[in-house]
Amino acid sequence: MIIRNLKYIFAGMFFGIIAVKSEIISWFRIQEMFRLTSFHMFGVIGTAVVIGIISIQLIKRLNIKTLSGEKISIAPKKFQKGQIYGGLIFGFGWAITGACPGPLFAQIGSGFGVITVTLLSAIAGTWTYGYFRDKLPN
Amino acid sequence: MLELLRQPWHWSISGLLIGLTVPLLLILGNKSFGISSSLRHVCAACIPANIEFFKYDWKKESWNLFFVAGIVLGGFIGNYFLTNPNDIVINPQTQQELAALGIKDFSGLLPTDLFNFQNLFTLKGFIFMILGGFLVGFGTRWAGGCTSGHAIMGLSNLQVPSLIATICFMVGGFVMTWLILPFLLTF
Image 1 (cartoon, rainbow over the protein chains, first blue to last red):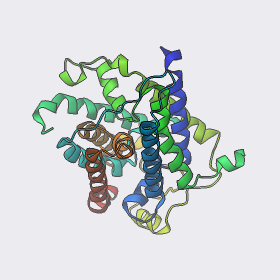
Image 2: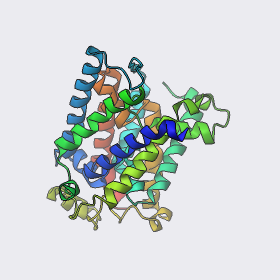
Image 3: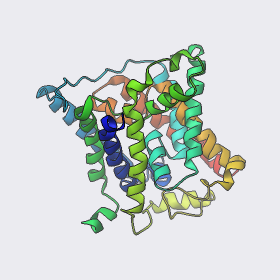
Image 4: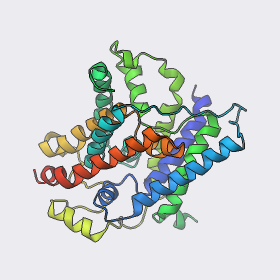
């Protein structure tokens, strides 16, 4: 199981290193973004999206396959009210912690052990959503 | 070369590399970039508690758990072997505004005034580390994705629901930063 997934560990390391070096895991950078005093985060996310769009278009048009020759398929996202309610709640959390889920993992790796508590709390939040899911507008 | 890597990376280089994570995962194994799902898989694996939302074969999605384990390792490598020799350059206006709200330490990636083990047992620490984390986990799952799944992967695939989610992430962040955070920081 570990051997089969080794490539994803390396992909994660690639992303983790970039996350640190691009400073997107910095609470201060997130504050700058929401205070509109720096272009840094907008530049990072904007460039990433442009590169992502070009990559997916190339994959679709040139019919690029996976390493094992499988056809690449991407599940479409369906609109749900949760994208509004949940999106706003996540936005609140993002501005408080200065981290979305990816950066939480990178912050722990970069030596902020206390963020393990934040991660556990995020897991608890996910669990709580699962518990109340039927009672929430989705 | 190492010297160059140690410097903070320009936003265009960082954005380029983050964007390349999208085709990397697709080509490696037909995987859509997304990180918050890993939190759901942890729930499904460790505390399913007979909840319908956590009854699925999480082992089929285990690549995501290996991916986030890699992010922890990458965070370690990035911080210890490619250490930026200088402090992060923060906009002076933001620095002043935050200093006025009681932030004193601007040397690391996170303000140690807020994020430390002693603070866990104070109201402020509870809000910034525990409540904040809870909102991130609850909100991303309700929204069906986070910055990676919606703002990067979803927008890259031109998904309108992801655009709506991304706009709501930003609106939530602006409301918190401008209207609520000033009170939370001065507790």
